[in-house]
Amino acid sequence: GENVEQHPSTLSVQEGDSAVIKCTYSDSASNYFPWYKQELGKGPQLIIDIRSNVGEKKDQRIAVTLNKTAKHFSLHITETQPEDSAVYFCAATDARQLTFGSGTQLTVLP
Amino acid sequence: DSGVTQTPKHLITATGQRVTLRCSPRSGDLSVYWYQQSLDQGLQFLIQYYNGEERAKGNILERFSAQQFPDLHSELNLSSLELGDSALYFCASATSKSSGNTIYFGEGSWLTVV
Image (cartoon, rainbow over all chains, first blue to last red; front, top):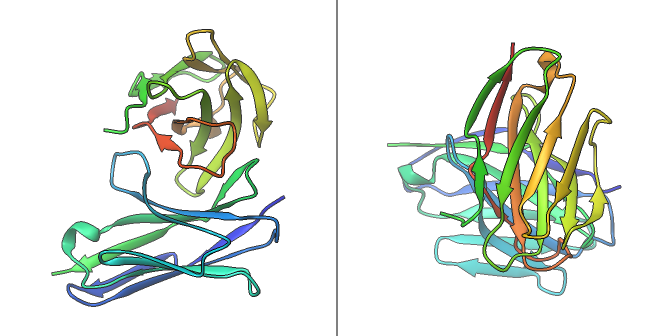
């Protein structure tokens, strides 16, 4: 089955700086890669996703890049704000089962 | 608010007992997923139902079972509970049977086994 590895497990940045979270996947059949944000005491919420026919996608301060050859994808958050502090999960699927990474605790320091 | 409703929000029970967690998917969604989130682990996929039928199975223990009813709500039954079953259990829903589309998570049910 699919295996998704996520790094780093914790990340602290100064407000206004950029944050990058990286994930690798094992199954070359995976074709959909969503990113979820989980705030304390809440369920994961989709923030951005990318499909295998696209190399990059951007939504305001958030962008995701995908390298199919290397089987890795990354989340980029620019101009970080305190409300960006949360746990971020990457995931990958071949349309049968969504496999999540282990999560990254992002802390934005004021 | 994702539109996925889970009850109860918190539950404390003793080892050996049985509990049922309930999930109402978003209006119109036919797929329901169950995930387990422990402190030291990420989101572990348990099982998926689509329109009443089991669609995919993950790392679900034999002590656990689930079903989806004709009105599309789902229940996750956990029996012979052990301390290690303490976790946050999420239900998620989606419109299609494929996990290659957005799935929406509920707020979760906190289970504490003492």
